[in-house]
Image 1 (cartoon, rainbow, N blue to C red):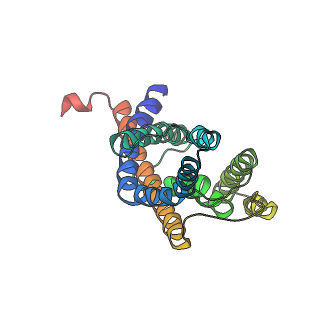
Image 2: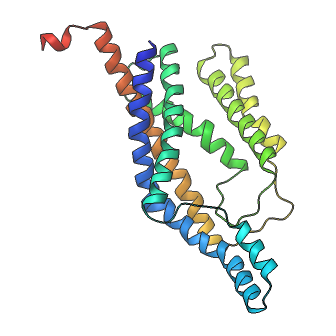
Amino acid sequence: MFKRIAQTAGFTGLLAALLLTLVQSFWVAPLILQAETYEKAPAAEMHEHAHEHGDTAMAGHVHDEEAWEPEDGWQRVLSTTGGNLVVAVGFALMLAALYTLRAPSKTSQGALWGLAGFAVFVLAPTLGLPPELPGTAAADLTQRQIWWISTAASTAVGLALIVFAQNWLLKVLGAAILVVPHIVGAPQPLVHSALAPEALEAQFKIASLLTNAVFWVAMGLISAWLFRRYDAHAAHPGLNHAV
């Protein structure tokens, strides 16, 4: 059982991560790069002003604030791929473990599991904390992380009760649990501000949502197909030799 989960998650995570990186490279990454030009403009102006006036302290402060980041090109792509791989394998492990409790009877059911994962980890948290471009004001990181985790957990529990519970009272409870985090509200910054234009922000939000939707549906389909394939081989170990 553990081997089947590990193999399903490993191959699913690899394929889904590569697909996600490919889509991000053509759609999401260009928007981020464009937003970074707005974010770096004030720092560049401050740096130039400091040198013009001989303010070495200010120039040093600007240099200190510039943290290392991968350069455009293969460094950024490699860094993105590595991060996507870690996340994808983690989510794939979760899906494969759930399949041991309720195995998909056909591969297409994996798309439903993928959409559920998209709703839990992307759509519900996005309602309160939408994707942000560089240079966007945000609330305290710890508070946002707590709200994000709480929202994902409540969404998972709520959907599970609505879909799998037999008692209608439990289904109503599930619906109530879904909306609790949004009634409480996500932490927000004192002042909403962004360096990038609103049109660019809108494009980024749409691109992020659709990219993640493709990622989750693909991961659901791939994991369901692999899990059923390993399940069939386990049930009929001599099938390959016979063929």
